[in-house]
Image 1 (cartoon, rainbow, N blue to C red):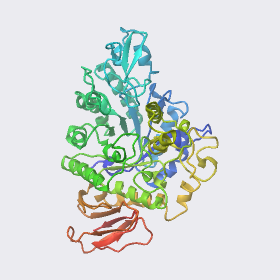
Image 2: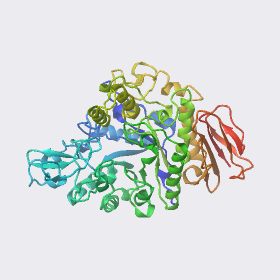
Image 3: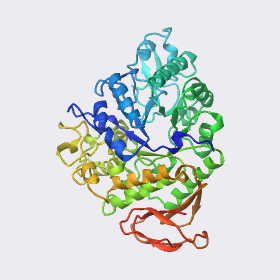
Image 4: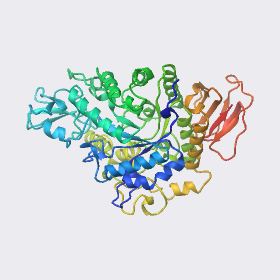
Amino acid sequence: MNKKWWKEAVVYQVYPRSFKDSNNDGIGDLRGIIEKIDHLDQLGVDAVWLNPVYKSPNDDNGYDISDYQAIMDEFGTVEDLEELMELLHQRNIKLIMDLVLNHSSDEHQWFKESRQSKDNPYRDYYIWRDGKNGGPPNNWKAFFGGSAWKYDQKTDQYYLHLFSPKQPDLNWENPKVREEIYEMINWWLEKGVDGFRLDVINLISKDQRFPDGKKEGLAGHEYFANGPRVHEFIKEMAANTFNKYEAMTVGETPFVDKEEAIKFVKEEREEFSMVIPFEHLEFDRKEGWDKITDWDLTELKDLMSEWQYKLQENNGWTSLYFCNHDQPRIVSRYGDDGKYRKESAKMLGTMLHTLRGTPFIYQGEEIGMTNISFDSLTDFDDIETRGYIKELQEKDQLTQKEILEIANYRTRDNARTPMHWNDSKYAGFSESEPWLKMNSNYPEINVEKDLSSDDSVFKYYQKMISLRKKYPVFAYGKYDILLEADQNIYAYQRQGEQNNLLVLLNFSENDADYDLNDQLEIKQAELILNNYQKEADFELKSSLRPYEARVYLY
């Protein structure tokens, strides 16, 4: 296997709007990240991924870009970004930017021109079509609800927007669009950016027949996800940009299973370094956004193992994550955000940092931040949540209280509440009221408190990251599942050239027994990581405490 810096790295994701506010306007910014750069260095991470900081009217919190080579006024300037990058590089931390290439903002100059007339030179930079039978060109649905087409009276045509109407899809079939995009990417790479996370990048190729989609699920996704030319476009982009700089590329790829993922990440295909899978975070929403479903650990283990084995066999790589700006807090989903908050936060972190792939830490995960609970349906900022609330209200099958309960569990706002730095007013994030409501548990859960405690989630993450740097088996070891049918314990081995790891994770709130005598012949092993203060001797037959994580080296 080829060794790469990004295979050995631990990546920290910063959501700039909620990380640290330096000028007390209630909104996080680039200078705020600069202020807290030592926190990232102290944690030990190797790279920082910034959510979009480009100029944007903020219809979808920066994922609607109006200028790819300028910075959002609220966040600062290009010079601030350059200073941040220089300070990160001084600490041997790489900078990963977020690129949104499937769509732009409707306030981008290209789209302003495009909607002027049918013969405008920029018309073909976007996807325009005539309506059908007095309605949109087809039945495709947008991710945020409603039709994926918006009628534009001026030219009597519809444009495609797979997300908000303010996020028109770019036309990748047009070579001029691709050339402009590659030029912009290289401009950032020349500045010293070390890589990119590419938003919904597998949606860039659409079936040019634009047929109606199946009505189940998101109508049309079979024609706009993983489309006919998607790999051609990605290979061309990589060859003209990323591959010249050995940049790390992380493809966000909805509707991609392990088979499809291989096409994006098999090393010899030279497309992406890794993808962002979604399936492992669908278990509690199998019946849709509005139904919170129970899930079974064996399902999660089976899925994780399928991905681990498939990528291992095909020389492919993946990102390892539970939390990001689009997902509620994992300790409130797959862990216990009450009695066993610390234990379950550490256990879930242990899983990500001991599987084969590149671990991602989302801001606040390193201190075990939890979901928030809003009191009113009007408190939600997230465009996706607001869309679902509207749909549920129109269906009129649930009470307002039931809708609020579901929205609180599901909302992406859970991840976007401001970072907890200390127990002062507004948690040290700002001296003014933040753009989004604070989680009320910040006096108990904050960085300052974690730094002063030896048993904190932060100190555990520090240790976990330092072990990954010390032992190559964490990055490169071969994965093999154990105790496959166990409903409480996720156990596996990682087999490396010098050492092996045995990982034992209890996903339940009760003690859980295990017996590995039939599967392993290990006489002696060193406990190198454990989320309980009272350590455990090595035994092939024993029990794990609630949400306990143990990692043995042998």
